[in-house]
Image (cartoon, rainbow, N blue to C red):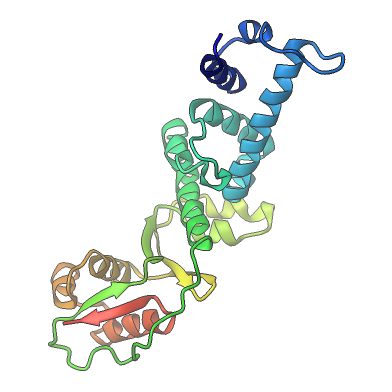
Length: 251
């Protein structure tokens, strides 16, 4: 077995994709360990390290599933999804899709994981130093302006109160948030901190259209006038500006 073959076979064995006996002939274990036991040490360490990485990124999923189910889910995910990065923090981006496929009867799990992945990515972005934009964005309501949001901004919608689930620290309160209820969120980086705000459906739709490059007038044509009056437009945009989440306004 040449070195390249050994590396590939060793990697597959560690991930449980190949049987150990063929590899055992190539292993010289230390001390009194049998070859199979030496291989098991690597297998267990590999699984434990990536399980830990998933647990750090998806803490709320872990709390909802409980230890036993989370560890079993992580074990199966790791078998199907090897790491291709030297940076362990990159691991697990496919976990929300995995939960969506394998827990279709519990869609809340995939939604929680999706939210936690956004939070993780925002947390690791560089500081948002904000801009010098003035709060009074709309000097003329007929002016067809376009808005550019900070790169950290995302407009998310869920079928469950995911933000409330994520915030609660009391395990006994978790069942209270597992019933369906639409939730609309805007996320971003405010300075060095995570910014999360629950917003109304109209604000979410208006903001998402702006985010996708439509003008204010174009977004209003799609969303209709705000239920609370046109003053809501200025209020929404001013709030986003104060928090450093709008970086440019252009005509």
